[in-house]
Length: 140
Image 1 (cartoon, rainbow, N blue to C red):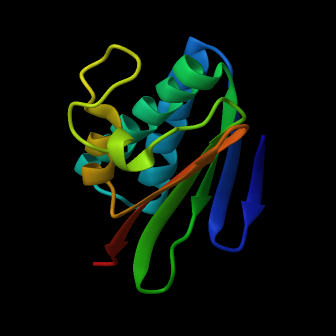
Image 2 (cartoon, helix red, strand yellow):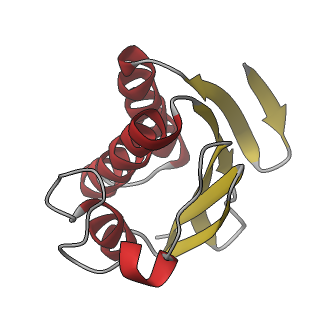
């Protein structure tokens, strides 16, 4: 579902299967391009969206993301909020350390995503995890 806002465009997506990860990545890249982000920033954002969307599928089974144009007169901006109702992240400080994984992976996902983004936050408890990322650049 897509809805227009004052800042530009907002998109809400359900993430419940592998194709939703592909769609979320493509939609994030497209919105970033429409806002005016460089191809490199579009790729950074698409990478972060892929990682966080896959985490929803792997750890919660399903969830959602909301993409928002948060641009102002002086900045380009995009914020994406990922939410799920899974078991939660038991130890956030551990989960964002390089090499830590509860799913058998390399443990690079959350810490890598944090490095790619200008803003990164996690709130988590059993039944609700919310990860918020944002990319912000000065207008040329």
